[in-house]
Image (cartoon, rainbow, N blue to C red):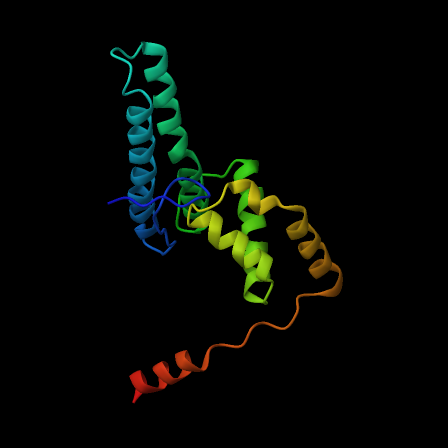
Length: 166
């Protein structure tokens, strides 16, 4: 059963990992979003005996749009690796630099950067959340004052690493 989140109407978890696994997870997530769009369209149009080509085309556009952002994220991340071939358009380079900065802010304890990054990459919020003025302010503050001290590594991870090496 597909459960919807209030933010996007789509429920799933996408985790970016190496070797193309992120893309596989994202495709499943996008498929869940697309299935919800189809379900909602059928529920909304159930009273109509006949659906016209214009309505069908609108639904196709919404289904396609559900894959746009995850696909752009996946290709942006792939093209950032030195082993990949191809070049990034300026917009993708900017997006990659900005998300790198947000990830650094999140690692250094900026809760707003962490929440924006996690919610958008998990498809629980619109990509515009990454460009909220408070995040731009945090990035500017970090550029002027320097990054705050990085969050300490959780003790449980250190204990786990010690138990594996023993």
